[in-house]
Amino acid sequence: MLNVPRRMTALLLAGVTTVALAGCGSSGGSAATPSLVPGATAGGKLTIGISFDQPGLGLKSGDTYTGFDVDTATYVAQALGVAKGDITWVQADPAKRESLLTGGQVDLVFSTYSITDERKKVVDFAGPYFVAHQDLLVRRNDEDLTSPETLNGRTLCSVTGTTSSTYIKEHYKGKIALKEFPKFSDCVSALAESSVDAVTTDDVILAGFAAEPQYKGKLRLIGRGFTDERYGVGIKKGDSAMAEKVNAALKSYIADGSWKRSLDATVGPSGYSIPAPPTPGTA
View (tube, rainbow, N blue to C red):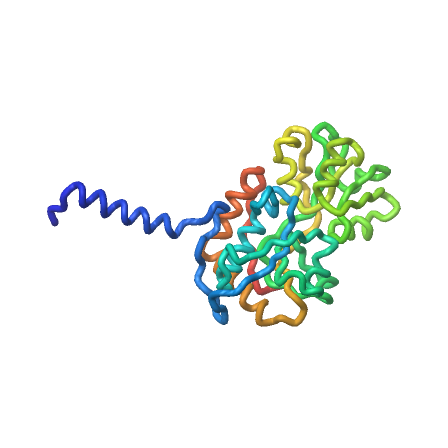
């Protein structure tokens, strides 16, 4: 065995630690510098649509953007050769996601964007990169509400342009009074103020709101999902080359552990049970 002085040993260990930390995730838990995917070149810029009001997923606070969708978009952008600082974030409210893409106002949309056949007539998708389930958020002490069937004669809130509102209209027309707002944060505020009886959207979104300090202990998630919502990356119709590159990046995101690290850091604190990853490229 070599006789290495203690000081030299310490320096060597410090160097190893520095290298190891350099490969760890960013503040959101995702890897900071993913490898470029085939067909990608370094440089350039991207404009990406995200939600601005969804805790744990896409949230704007001042000039800071956080959440799983933000981490996912950042990872994909870097795999395409676009540095984090060269991303322009644009608010993508549910009703405006298609028009943002078709109008060329954004390059990609990462905004809890469920893949549906109807939407695929207008835009293309990469993914899926997450599977959520439509659920209900109610006030803590309202124990009578356990499913959509128990909402007969009550007022339910959802957001215009979402699969959640469409599902209620198709399955409970004439039974549930549906009130629609532009943003989920509007619905949750109305629920807390007793202006509506429940809010419906994806469970992972609702869990984030229920864990917010102003709602914690006041609102609760039913926890009985009744649909599958496959989240995809919205891409302009016909851009198959972009879809291929984004799918390659998403596969790397899941394979290198960045997907799980991000979810643990952003969604995990709400108490939401992190599912197994889906298979990108099956949109």
